[in-house]
Length: 270
Ligand code: NAI
Image 1 (cartoon, rainbow, N blue to C red):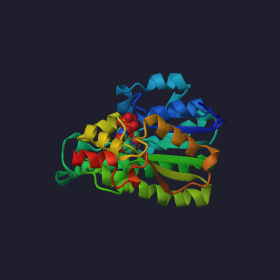
Image 2 (cartoon, rainbow, N blue to C red):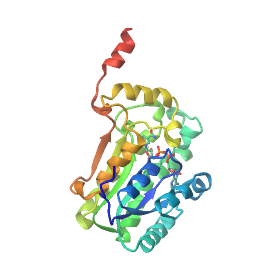
Image 3 (cartoon, rainbow, N blue to C red):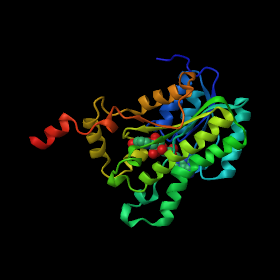
Image 4 (cartoon, rainbow, N blue to C red):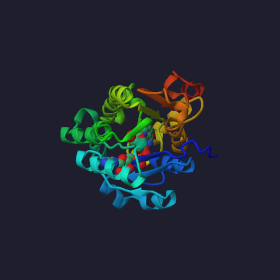
C-alpha cells in the first residue's frame, strides 16, 4: 500500500544490484511513495547487474560512481542535484563487500590489503558519501541519510569476519557525522541493523543458510525481509521521523533482544 509519504522528495539510492538487493526493493518502494531519485552503483557492478531494468521501472537516471572515490562521489552529488532539479531529501547507502570473505580467508588469517579495501568500500565510503553531500551543501533541511548494517557490530558472529569491524565503524560514522549534519544542516543520519537477508552480499557469508534459519527461529516476529527493510527506510525518509538521528535501529523481528527462543531450546532437548 502506498501513502504518498515521499511526495516531492528527491534523493540518491546506492547499491541496487539485482531484484534481491535491499536497495532495489527500497527504490521500488520510494518510487511508489512518490519520491524521485538517481540510482548509482560501482561501474563494474552495473555491467553485471540489471540496474537498467530498475531505472526504467522507476523513471530514474543512473549515474555510476565508485563509492570509494571522492572524485566520483563529488561528480555524482553535483549531477544528481542537476538531474533532480535541486537539493536532496534522502540518501540510502546500501553498500558492503569483504574481500577476505570473498577469498575464503578467515578472521584470523586476513590479508590486510583485502581488509583495507573492504573497509574502504563498506565503512569509510559512508563517510565519503556524507562528506561530499556536506561540502556541496546538497541536503535540504530535515533530509534523511540511512546506511545498512548488521548486528555483528555488537555481538560476535564468527563467519561475518572483518565485516563485523566494518559495520562497527560504519555505525560510529553515523553517530559522528550525524552530530555535524544535525547541528549545521538539520539533517538526520541513522543506520538500520537488518536481519540476515538472502541477497548477493548476504549469501556470500559462509554458512548463510544456517545463519538465516537460526535467526528466523530466534526472532519472535521472524526475520525481516528486504521489502520490510525498504518500508522501514521509507519511514525514516519521511517527515514522520524528523527527530530520529544518530541511532542504530534494529530491524530484526526482535532477534537482538532475545536471549533464547523456545524453538531453539526444543532443538537442544529433543
Ligand atoms: P547486494 O549485494 O545486493 O548489495 C551490495 C551492493 O554494494 C551492490 O550493489 C554492490 O555493487 C555495491 N558495491 C560494492 N562495492 C561498491 C563500490 N565500490 N561502490 C559502490 N557500490 C558498491 O546486497 P545487500 O544485502 O542488499 O546489501 C546492502 C547492504 O545491506 C550492505 O551494507 C549489507 O552489508 C547490508 N546488510 C545486508 C544483510 C544481508 O543479510 N543481506 C544484513 C544486514 C545488513
